[in-house]
Length: 453
Image (cartoon, rainbow, N blue to C red; front, side, top):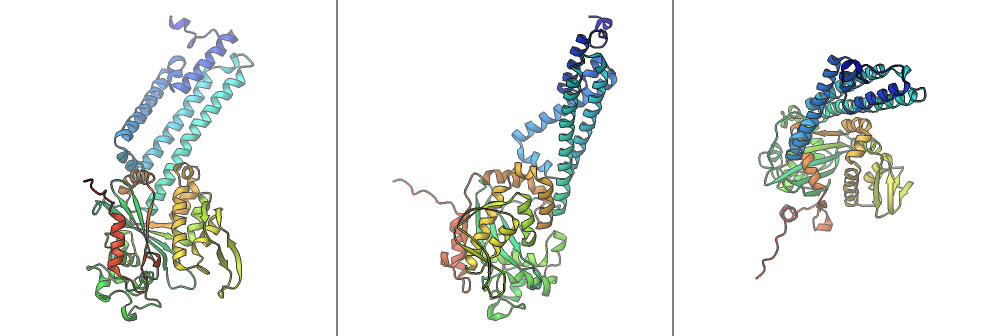
């Protein structure tokens, strides 16, 4: 067919049937292979540019897909890095603009006025809807990538990766509870999450806030001050001599004990708590995560609430004498917003501190279950905004890809728990740390089958 008789480039413009058919072909080609409509019916220079962009994008998708198939941790590391996310945002914005330009140019090339009257709104509407959907998706993807980059930069520090110790990563999780009636923050929820670096199996070790005579690792500056354990003979310098007051004492009285804490993305009080957690458990704590309970409700609301199975009646009191009950949490499955979930985790009146620990761990597991990738993505802006105000950690961005990969394995296992409470023969006010470490060792050491004779 000669160029002169080519029905795409030189159509019979007097025939509405031919022009309608040509219009549909150009619009579909623009959808399937952006740039091809211009090569066939418009500026070949623009078309070749569009095709190069299209094939480059296809190539990138194929390369990333293959890389994820064989090296998922590498891809996840790239896309959980603030620089990688900004690059992704820029690519999405660029292709969104290219798509809009090519679609508008395609609509110019179809010559709608020459098409059949009934087909004109259908052709224009189809092209416009596809343009808005694809360009809008690219724009939203760029927005999410940019927001994620800002979130990662505000929460996670820059630093090198570290290897597991004895095949495990141990992360200290602190639930901070600051208030007007307190001097500084006091972590009321202290947990060590010990993760098997191969299988992803997680064991949550609950440390009671009122644990006494806490030992410290030998090289800790606190070990020199409290060689017999924290609070031995009531020698601590704050109003309580128990585990959760270590943060307050170090932060307010002796921040000079940990001069490098701030530069490492931590705080002196957190480092004091880390030394205590290592002394209690006998584990090396590579990282910490501090969650501000005051902002916790915002994160839960951002996730759309959480589902909690309440096992016993829990009261919420409105006064210091605990005589007026504002409301009760009744037994049964309940969907809680942030306000009620926070009260459920905090309430200690009418129940023991150990029951409170169990409820806080229950809430942590409920949030992990609610924070599915689809749910987080759908509510990303509010989740990221709440998360950046709630979470503080020293986990480096360089480790995020690895931990995301490990988390996928974690979801295939039940979470083991070790509560250092009287139910496990641990008296927090007079603890035997040899017994405590044996409990932890037993939980972290996989059971072996008895050999068959």
